Amino acid sequence: MTYCGRLTIIDDFSKESVDIVVDHGISGQYVTRVVDTIARFRPLPQTLRTDQGPEFTGRALDQWAYERGIELRLIEAGKPTQNAFVESFNGKLRDECLNVHQFLSIEDARSKIEAWRVDYNLHRPHSSLGQLTPREYLRRSGIEDKEAANF
Image (cartoon, rainbow, N blue to C red; front, side, top):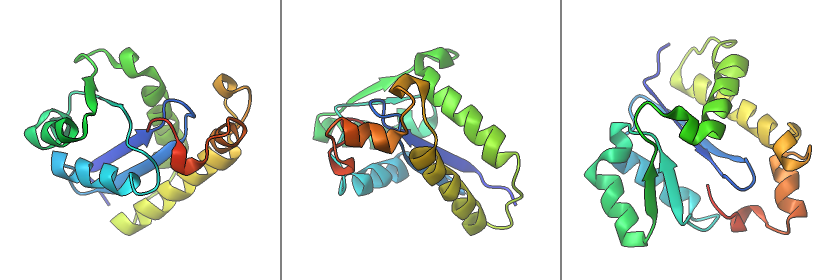
């Protein structure tokens, strides 16, 4: 099976993987719907940092962010180190999940990737969080999941 798009949403504060969206294509409108869905459970961030993909540089996301007072911060083309944590996260996802599973359908891909994401959030301590998992770090910081600072 081949899937065409993946959208990873990470909370900079807690390093929590808020969502990993897998679909045949991801447009700017699709991104806005995903973030609006997440916003039902946690506040919208003040800033969204993205790469230069067409889903992030088009009119749909720009208008959506403007209407909500959210700053869009695009990393410079060819400068992945400006978003080093997400690049590292995507590398782990690739090495530990995408490269070790064969996906039989888009539903199968979503299921296996979601299981990896949950494990990452609940069972994987991070040195940058004092060896706490993202969820434990949020809990100890006094911030409930629905009150997380940023995606």
